[in-house]
Image (cartoon, rainbow, N blue to C red):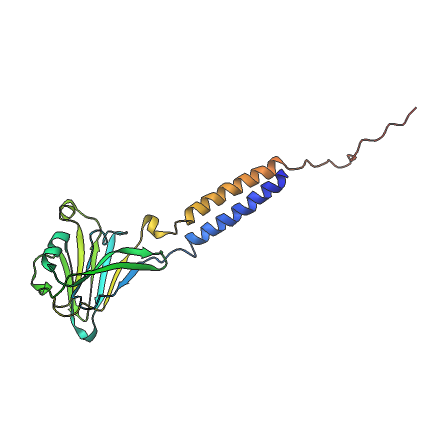
Length: 225
């Protein structure tokens, strides 16, 4: 019975270890975590909530494309400055990222009505990029004390502040730490290793001793005198 349990532990451990290894290698999440954001009807800007840019990794990249070759503007500002610039303008806010590591989904909400000013004329941006039809901006996710005191850094995507926001916006990160692997990968690998060890020890402890060559299986009967 104990020998059978040891074999079960060994086989279960090998299965768990194999599953954990696959999740850490072949079945690991994509190296880039990317979500697409669709601006709501009437929105003149897409803006991230504080903390979204700092989701994971050393840098966040914001990319946008507008149909018809419209100018695209991407800016990073403190949450306080961005809110003051937007006022009551209609915008789509990216509040977080949900879904799985393989299929992340942006969580969004809509607020505000009406237009905003031309973002190019504002002096609130700590980093910005613009281009005809598309633009991209990379931002380091380390927040200093000044940014933290002003609510953190947020990214804003717009055209000229009055027409519709770019119809395709992407946010991407290179995941690090727990965001770079499936949550069950390491526990499976560790559990598998422990079970394999227990099973191997069990088999060694309950190994049947071998009979030496020439030794009879049963003691010979003594004949009566």
